[in-house]
Image (cartoon, rainbow, N blue to C red; front, side, top):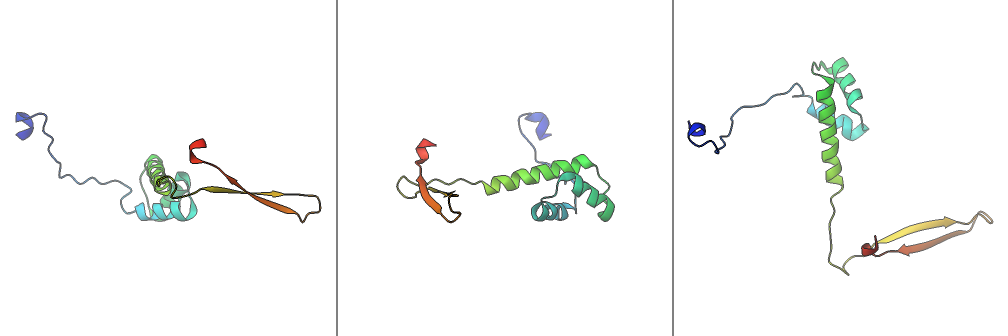
Length: 114
């Protein structure tokens, strides 16, 4: 009745959504995180060994979403105040004159130049 009287009001649903992947998420996450498996190999593994009856697209979409979330976790950027932290790139140049000379040098750069 609330929805009819106030059409702009959103009513929360108590519905519990289930998918064919329920119960397989832990296996899929382990395959992705430990072995870097792709959607096709995970789908094949689940259908042949674990009794999965869903479709390939469902697995592929889950794998893609999981990889994107993990990538975002790995690339968290943080900033510090100027003068608090320095960044240095290390580069090695090998001189092949007598196969023993190794010249190492620091290449400094300013973050604003990048």
